[in-house]
Image 1 (cartoon, rainbow, N blue to C red):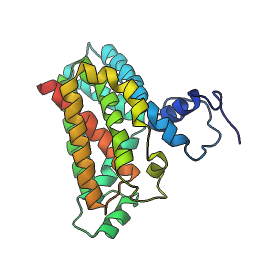
Image 2 (tube, helix red, strand yellow):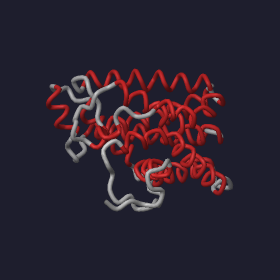
Image 3 (cartoon, rainbow, N blue to C red):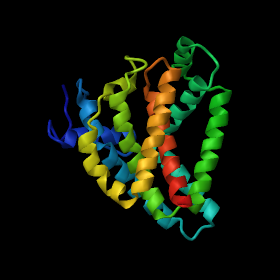
Length: 240
């Protein structure tokens, strides 16, 4: 099996995490073996720092622009850096979780690549809220939001089973959240109340979603939790 630079050391799971969560160029992984995505999950907060740092650079370059335009460019850069992966999860999750259907039907909707009215409504409201939060957000919100949201996904990966065992999200289950805490600790110390509040929000939202899906969660829901977690960080820092 072809392996990229970094071999079996810590660098390989980092590259896997960076390649999975962003559109940034990484060495060709060749092939991903069972368990590697679990090890890669320990680097999710570190990837968050990279995303946050690049967003701060964009914000600095766009500083001379009007606040609304600067926030719009920052939001566009945020979507571009993540390849809209998490936003797509939010849209798919909205269609499934908000539908007044049976659990099997919700799971079927979750696997449908087409978007319905719930996706468009939730997506529009979410992007509008995130844009408005970015109008008022300072550098700390932009830097910390990607880190905090990605850290709190790790406990979710450990607490809830996979709604669809064959799904992509199932490969990262039982993620290594204790090593991830090392990377997230500076964010927790910088904004402890926000860090705790986002954790409570993410875990409660995951619990609600799991009940709507028969007890498990999917990769789409994981993406939705990251997007919503980032929004809560921005709003909490703006209004604290």
